[in-house]
Length: 84
Image (cartoon, rainbow, N blue to C red; front, side):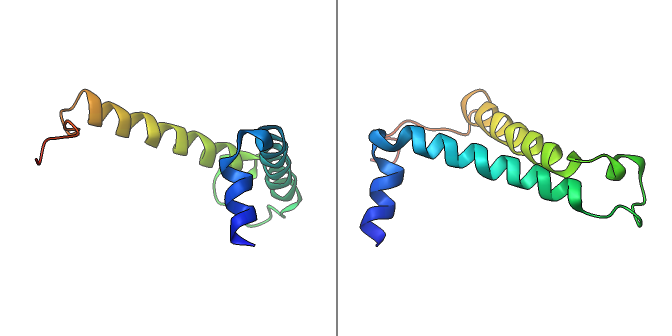
């Protein structure tokens, strides 16, 4: 079972299936967010359907770019043989 999961995520032959699975999960997240009742929303943006999915995705992308910037430009990343 674990071998088939590793093969699915590690093999390039399954790239199209992985991409379709990703799109399906993204659509399901947005659809479920649209179906949530918004009666007790405190702020205006909490009433927008799909806001939490968009906010989560953009936050993740921003986190990746900031960490890459800090690693490469901020001097946090070291050479591979730094500790040798």
